[in-house]
Amino acid sequence: MSRTIKIYSISLLISGFISLIWILFDIYQIKTDLSFVIRFDKVGLIMGIGYLFIILFHILSLIFIMIHFHLKKESNPLRNSTVILGLFSFLAFGIEKVMYDEVGREYYLEWPAPGEVIFLYICLGIHAIFVVTVFIFITKQLIISKKQKEISIQ
Image (cartoon, rainbow, N blue to C red; front, side, top):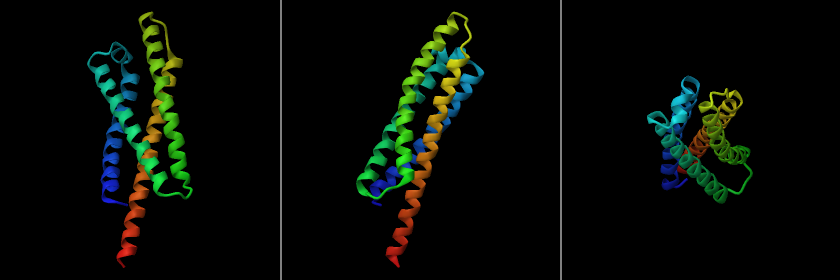
């Protein structure tokens, strides 16, 4: 593994950790006070910035996995499942946008919106699973790279 890819991997691990914290913050905010999320005040703005960061992490991690596809041609079930989960996670962003709009409309009309909130939790769960899967994938690649380096030194 080249030095550039190793630095990219470590930066992805750090940004993935921050993304996971933001996802957990979103879940907490939706659970505790949905009105702040819908009104897009300070808390909603923080969540919006978090979504931009999470989307950036998704894009960068999928680029990393595609680079890995290009460099290593053999079949890797973890890599393949990470790509599929990443695509589902990208689709979940669209679903979340629609659900936030629906919850906002129903909240102002004082209607209950438990179904939409459940969809939000499912989408955030998909994002969290994707982040954890990317953690595992990158960590595994760093360990394999380290072992190959030790073997080549001996």
